[in-house]
Image 1 (cartoon, one colour):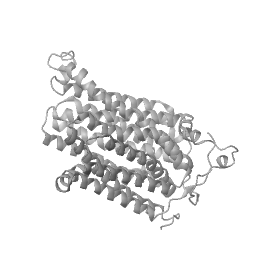
Image 2: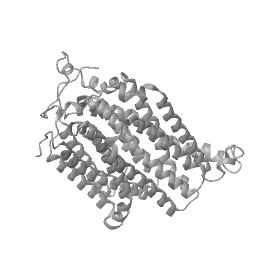
Image 3: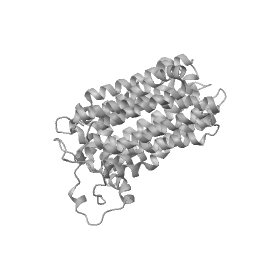
Image 4: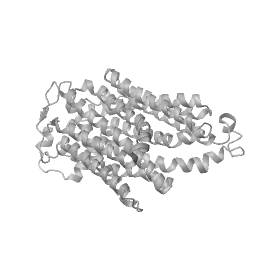
Length: 459
């Protein structure tokens, strides 16, 4: 096992990152394959959409509890358990498909189990990063993570289509199982240090309950207006971005062929990859990360508007590239702020609470985008619709123009939210008003323990 020292933290992180990158690619292949299987088996778009809800809701509900566990126990072992649980979920899905059962509830139950396993792995992974690398390297490291996510999103549809045709859906799922095994293997060969407990947390008299510890993340964020405003900003951004993810394919297909759709989606994927690579290269050189968050959001909002203005494949391709290029910049900068401003022994709880609240708007967007398009905006911008004589004179009328108007509204709203964030001093000055919780030197550590660490006192 590679033991952590002051000089090899980046090496250990890179080993873990490679394992998680391979696992992420397998997970995206898994999602592609099971989506095909559900559509072929049920021919139901509703049951297909239920996959997304199973992959989001259970994890959001359990996330604060998982964060408390990540701050109490050895994070490396939690990552191993999380990856192992996800692997078992994948194997269960393969067995369900092989069994050719007609019941769908075992399939969705297996997906939920995998989502819960990931909910414990996620905070343990991300809270471990500041324990391994110096503060000055966090921007670059988070850029590497964004790049890995982009690689998974780009390669999964390409490889998935070929693999499903050659080895079948169950074979693709077994590949995902193998990638989890690879990720676990990388974790077996490295050590991850645990943070020292703050003095006020180790000398308190009565230990708080696990439930109190679970609520700690919200109390911590609420007491810091800069982080609270950043969190609410992220929740709004996720609402808008998720609606774009639901509506972009119907918008493009309203005026272009499936071949053009593929080119536009590839442009978006290229933007995501290049944005991640840019942050992996220069993410640790930004003087003010909050400017990257706000500036990236303004750019994303403007590209959203460009998405909807005209039914032009060229314009939409440019908009897709620009929008997705901005996403890794926003994600890398804001996540690094959290890692720098939150104490390492509290990071699991705070990041999990951040995740729950920031992503709580995604189910809302998933449920609202379709009905808003089908029953309000598309009819309003039909040839003889209610807005044909006003908005229709600018954006046009007919198929897809209502969705285009939604893009204009969403982009405008995101731009205004970003500008409001800049005008709010607590958010704009969060990096200067809130002191860094970690020094420039490597962190003090202690050996991981098998049982719970001393529980922190309430903030």
